[in-house]
Length: 113
Length: 114
Image (cartoon, rainbow over all chains, first blue to last red; front, side):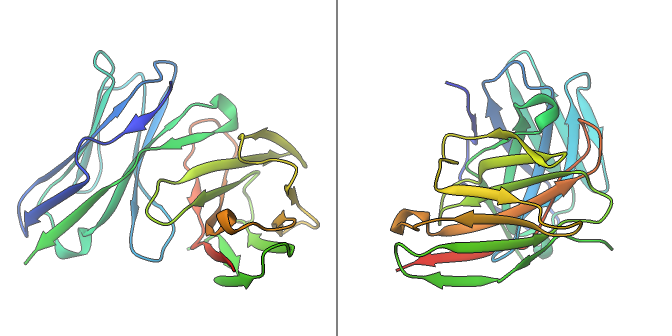
């Protein structure tokens, strides 16, 4: 079936380290991918997106890499801070213009001071 | 900064009762969505709404559910005859025109069916 999943359910890093969160997807027709951050009791917050015609996109302290050959998506967070502690979801748009997002299970990132 | 607002933040209802979850999307947005997240599980798509009609819905969104945009600002999700398994966080989201624009999510309504 079509799914988006995460390899690691939890990730613990030291403050200042770089974090890498991975995601696998199986719908080769998906053309748009998003990373969301969710803090406890809050809704998903957009971090960064990437279109399928790109391999890499950078934002402020975050980079998303897309490998369409192996259907893999990753989020890199540079100089991780305690405020980055949250659950991170990757999501793919499997609905074309209807923007039907399929979310992965989520990775809990814990940043230790 | 514009945001999607949802009310109430927490709703407790008895099994079999009807509930209406309310959302005020960002004002210039044209696409509206409902998602839900059962505790400890991933966020699941329920329905998308555009131009005053449902554009897509998931298998979860059965006849028990309905959506409405009763005026120019509100977007509601009605759940008739609630079941215990409807207990979840319900998120409303909206986005601008364009297939590749991001969706902004509200803070969610926690629905507890007892």
